[in-house]
Length: 390
Image 1: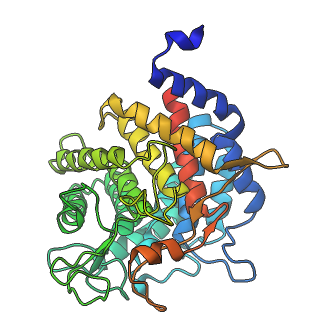
Image 2: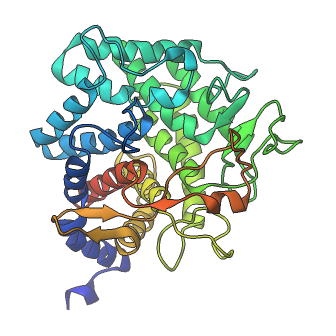
Image 3: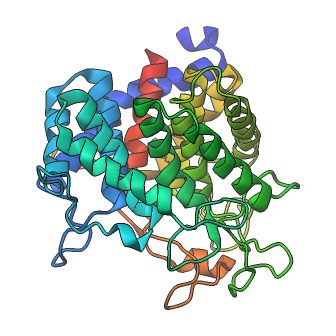
């Protein structure tokens, strides 16, 4: 009788709540702390290094710690960063002169540790990452290059790797001028990569138009990769959280987020509630629904609603997406925790061997279990849905 009195959106949320008791953020965190007990070993037998993958996982653990107050999560975060950061704030294996914006991602974890413990070593380490942003090579109109070895290129991935840390750091040290630069990064990325017909953003843009993957007229890469759009959507809600209420660029970012949300909703798969590896080619042979992008979109929509940037009408989209993630990707483990399947291990452009950004390329990369990028995004999505339901 209860279900007859509930709206469809309410039924979805009741269903999700029942699922969470077994497969929510705590279940995923238990997996993380079991399989990556000491540090994030991405490739067994190879040395551990400073990598954004770990930052995504720790961001999810941080959200769970803030939500629950359970100190075991904070201890795990601190232990993970103390492996890299010495008392002088030097970061093991990090090289500023690489100007790789991926390496800035973990700075948010450092800021969390500094604000919580007051230990100066974390601020000194974060200062190095801020120094990298100050010196990061830029396009002619001021956009950060993705990496020194990828000249003249802006990637959607890079907005997530750099801007939320940039915004949180600026808020901490009261650097109001920095917010103008942060806004510029999002505005430029949308200007150069957004497709007017779909509302989606291409994975990357090459100002020089010299890359083989780049359109010779627009400089855009050929396809809409799910996780790239996921990085971008998460970057918007995470950076906006630190914007001063009277900062002029705040309205610009909210408007970009709302346009992005429209496109995310449009390309949600009606059958599974998830999103495809190549977003606009859901019915094409070989394409598949992908876990990390689906988690990222659920997180961005749910957090955007919670913080008031998006209307509550997106609640049904987020709930359907999260229910789909449980159905398509989550498996219970004998240990009592969970596995997240269905995450593409990597996708990029250029490099060696050369990645041409074609549809066939995006479908050629391996799909694996418990990829840290998917795991971190799931933690974030599950935590947001659980907060909404409360």
